[in-house]
Amino acid sequence: MNIAIVGATGNVGRKLLEVLEKKQFPIDELFLIASSKSVGKKINFKGKEHVILDLEEFDFSKVKIAFFSAGSAIAEKWGSFAAEKTIVIDNSKFFRKDPDIPLVVPEVNSKDLSLLKNKNIISNANCTVIPMVVALKPLHDLYQVKRIVASTYQSVSGGGKAPMDELLSQTKEFFENKELKSKYFTKQIAFNAIPHIDSFLENGYTKEEQKMHDEVKKILDKKIKISSTSVRIPVLVSHSVSVNVEFNQKYKLDEIKNVLSTSPGCKVIDEHEDGGYITPVEAENKFETFISRIRSDESQPNTINLWVVSDNLLKGAALNAVDIAEALIKNDFYGK
Image (cartoon, rainbow, N blue to C red):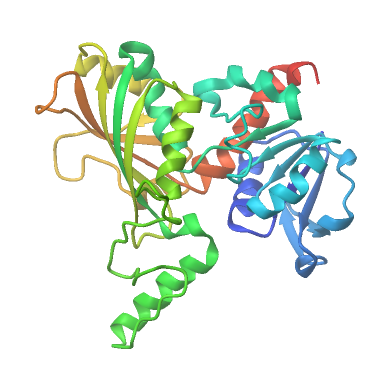
């Protein structure tokens, strides 16, 4: 089939190309699309150079699936327009709250793909929500999750290439004893942790935290209670989540470890010894959602703690988008 990637020159766009190649996704013709400033540039895919095309001029009827990875403004302007002619899988936050548009993590709620018929758009979830619900879905099936308290430790790549460059430049300037100036963060990011991602809401939470609350409910179960804190840390790639999970019934810790070890997309690394856990650096460029530090919360009945880590540019974005496309193919596009 013919495929398009809108935002092909960005971090997620390039990761999409990597995933499509690694998974040997069935592509007849690939169209790489970006803004006018990138038109004419070339990107190599499977040994062939592809010229960047202009979004303003592209005919979406040429493709079966269009991956959108260019942010909310582009999704708002072009997503519904493209969906009149093709299936859109959007990586931005723009469509996530729309009740008629499915918010899909295939290991968790692939049944919601049937909602594609509403607007021909599928939305990709937040980059910390995806790995968390991948880890929680098998546990929810066993014991029914009642409440979640999550603290996220998010890499700078969640903000794009420019924040990554700022971390690198600030780190260099720190060792050169220069004054550190912040452009993309509210505080110094090098050797620091900033408990603030996105803008603040009236309830005191940030939009990033509210997205987690809303999306977990939409994907997993609207009855789940959830509270979170989102922190930006000086790591280039991979997000981590410390999750406190309260169930509606008693659990068996061994059963939790066993079911997570055999659940799609999950990999348990949980040894009670030095280094017997996963860190963001080790998760980079890996497809799996890693789960460590599985233990009982001795202060609260029916409650456990988990440490969940994944590459935010992969399972948190590009990989999940391709997984959605594969699920569509497997289910014959639900009649489309």
